[in-house]
Figure 1 (cartoon, rainbow, N blue to C red):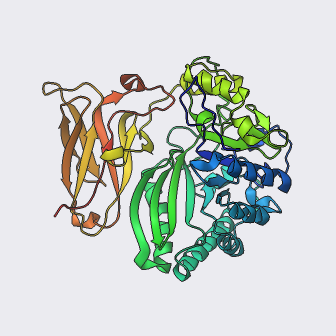
Figure 2: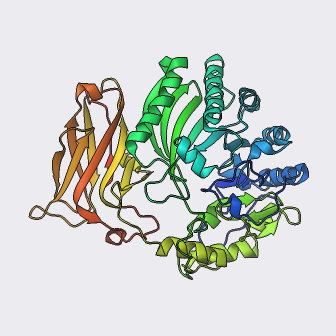
Figure 3: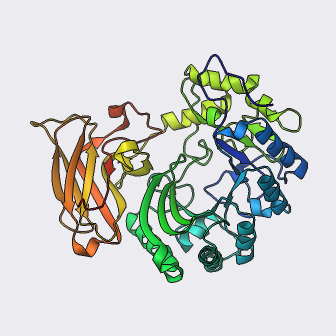
Amino acid sequence: MDIQIQDPQVAIDPHPCCFWIEITNCCNFKCTFCAYPYMNRKPEFMTFDTFRRTVDELVESGLVRRNPLVGLHMLGEPLLHPEIWKFIEYMNSRGLATDLLTNGLLLTKEVIDRLSSLCVARLTVSIQSPDESAYRQARSGAPKEWGRYMDSIRRAVERYLRMALEQPSGGIERLDLLYMTTFHYRPGMDGFSSWVDIRERLEEWRMLAAGICPDSCMRHQVGCDADNIRKFRICTVGARTLNFSLREAGSWAGTLDHARKPEPVDEGRCSAPCDQLIVLANGDVTLCCEDYDGNLAIGNVRETDLARIWMGEKARAIRNGFGENRVVAPYCQNCLGYRMNRSVDPVEDGFFPLERGGNDGPFFQWMGNRASMIVTTAEGDSRLVIRVLTISPCSQDSPQTFEVRLEQNVPVLFLLTRPHDWHTFELDLPAPYISRFLLMSFETDRYLVPSQAGISADRRRLGAAVALPCHQQS
């Protein structure tokens, strides 16, 4: 049954673009930054019959037309499932690509070999903790100590790179090492909160890769994906890629923020119900990847066709409500209430995740008057081209100052005189800073707040956006 239904009340593509099948909601960690300890659902493993029915209906209904990549995770650890290999094999037989996120505890060279033989499209290792102290904070009682945990992940990464050299195509296409940043929110642990520390860890992984495939290592920042995950490409061998990824800590719709209860709202918008389709371990279908307890369940695949659930009355009511700036579901009311009413405290380093820059290239945005980022430079780069987008009022008579500092050098001062416009500046790149990760910091004389750009405090983004193409023009 191919979907032909068009909702007359809200202009959306009826085909979602993000899919997750939660093959289990069981986990071998209880992390402070995750909603798993707060889950009220019964821990269980999805049956193969439920999985097969879900996959068949995704394919036969045409729901996956926009994106054939399907994640086999949501809240639990997928490698715990005793039939995971059978599940991935069936995905392959139906022409779907597998996306797998694991905490890495069960990751071994043998598991990497098996995942590679099954041609998993993307494997994300959710390391999250930047060091042993954070690991102990976030994962108390973990079955592995920090050293053994990281050693097993390093061996798995080494195995991935050696296999990539032997067979550049096929196998696992992309391996992402995911860490948490806690520039603004600390859910029971300290993630990365300093770009100096981030650069140090980046270099550690780059050096590991360089020792195995020195001709394939790259220092390339590739921007941000739809989940606001900032990525650095460490190494590319043929069609295989090793990435270092950063994601700012979240609160799971306010669940982890014990300091303040959500204040429900009945007005607002959210794109998740138009884009996301998640089938939980018990077959319940939800429309939000933060709905860890299935509060938004709109049906069950064991009882109703998936396409009918997706375009059914409950789902349409939620989507139509957002199309009219109304928040219908109580869970959404609490979630948006928490996000929209959350206060944002000033911080010394105002980094926020990268946003897609379109024709202007990748850029970052911040709130406050300071920000830092890591720039990647290559051989042949002799200058940085910095493009700054101003949002605050400024003019020739009242310019906005913008200071740029490379490493610990004396900052260079620029003046921004045109509001709501791009300003372009160039900085010579000293020889010691060529072909390396480069720490840059920025400071302006104006404290930037979301209301200046008409953006809610939820997104906390605005001010100046800086694109940094590095190559010398011939």
